[in-house]
Length: 307
Image (tube, rainbow, N blue to C red):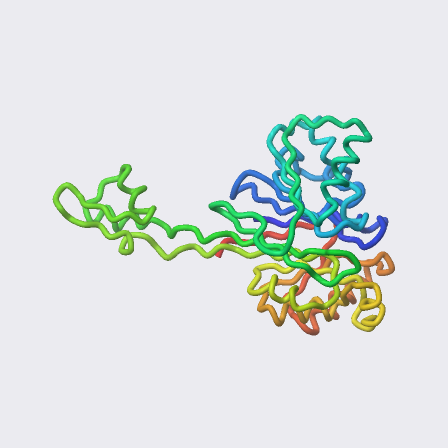
């Protein structure tokens, strides 16, 4: 499970930072990629990476400001020419369906794959046997959502050597034990899976927030997250400006991470007013409150290791 930053800027494209787009690479877990936001030129950013658009399975739009979705129609269209055949599901606030369908209709774009569009509300928006995704409203000028991605716990490791010592021979019975089934051997011996399977492997939690002021819902969505990705459009001394424009400062993001008990914080949505050196100052500000903080850059990748 890796996070790859395709765009980390705020408002408009800049030389150092394109507008927002984040890829959650689930190649080992399910062979796919989930995209969070698709600002202008997202597909151009992808050209400089190893990401294959045909592997994009889901796209989560946080809100309908242009710097978070102007790249979406082009990306969806190009995927048809890049070998994409599997279904793509786009999640987003009310209005996302009109935006996509009208854009594709007016441009007479035909997709070679099924496209599903889900207009979300707060609460559970996706669940399968691997992941749960929850959406929560944040505090912004228009409806803006944060997404909490929870990987379900995995079964513990099968203690093969212990099974062999107990006289259990390799075969289908191993699978039954790993799946938690109690097995009776031919000699009448009962094998309790509790004794032959290690503790469950805890799933990871990634929280990706859209544009927002400091708010309680951000804390709830980020609770115990392995990684919180939070906007930091302004420096710590610009709290009033951040509030007036419905954004956060470095200290706001760090306070959310601290109160939520996160393991790691990464700042993004950095205003173009901050050059490379100033961005390091933003990082230092956040670290005053929450030590394990990083700052995103375009094409930066973060690995979230298994627990």
